[in-house]
Image (cartoon, rainbow, N blue to C red; front, side):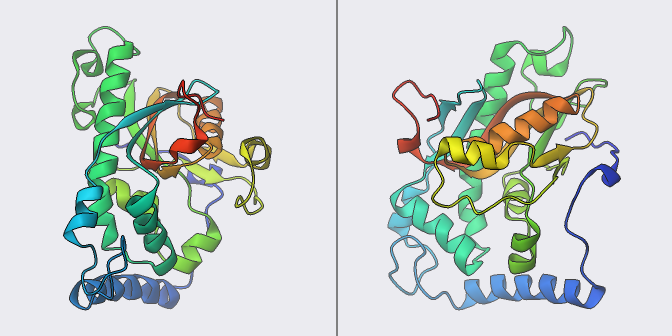
Length: 265
């Protein structure tokens, strides 16, 4: 993935903690991962001990990419449906900070990224002679001024303090991508739980800002998509910063929030 410089001063990111606290977070996350592997408590998918994920639940995490088109026109590819075992595994990852589960969810995001990339290539949104127009994989794109970058959703300060890890960034890396943190939080938002699509959209509008994205082609990534409001706000911020959004990829999507024609509701 192409690397580039950008103005970090433009991003409102959580203030770094003192060194001791930072080391504690990193060490705690590492120890939790080792401990979960050595002494798993119960399956994150079905709750049966003593496996972190049993064979049946692992099979349920086999990717089957699907496309959803949001009302804004943003094309979102997801590797899994957010229901049953998948929903429980992702919920366990977030609630119990069981980071080894990232390894099992990464193939879903990798499949979604591949699908989003192929979709973007078919759309023809590349200048003549650019590697993307020939179907080159994102890792091969190195040609200026048009560069492809994978951009994760920003982590809130509260989540960073609670988990000590940026889950979306970590998931993207395990999926084989090199996420570039262009997006930051411009302001606080209220809790999204229980809000409908329109309420989420209003709550999120103007909540993100993006570093200089001129000359960049962007694939947005997130762990899940529900109403699509977060990805649409991220897309707005990238476009406002001069970038072009080719699409989005998530590990899972909540199917009932999309209509029969694949339009976000």
